[in-house]
Length: 111
Image 1 (tube, helix red, strand yellow):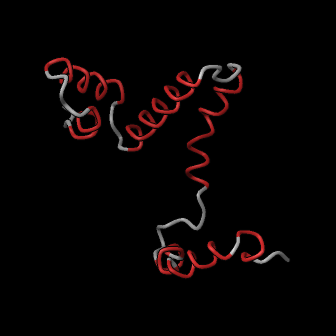
Image 2 (cartoon, rainbow, N blue to C red):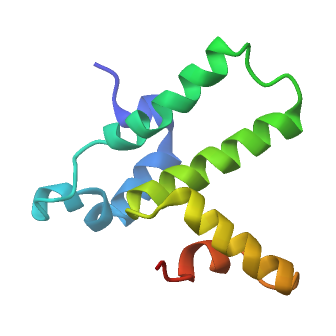
């Protein structure tokens, strides 16, 4: 059996000791999952789409897809009408280009 020390080195062991109370939240707090499968499942559809469309050839294209996927996934998790929220944010941004797009996307109340 490979120990954490042999596999990740002394820095990983020290970091896990320093953050022990944060590493085991799932033990003390029932709703906290013990794994990150939810995060992995959230990535699934975008990974499949990228693979069947022959990937992202250009770095900027890949970055744009990544940001948009994250944005849409986050808005969906917030039970927001994604298209409406993006439209509202863009409408506000057109009025004042100095506004923070993040704040516009995530703080404008819906109808």
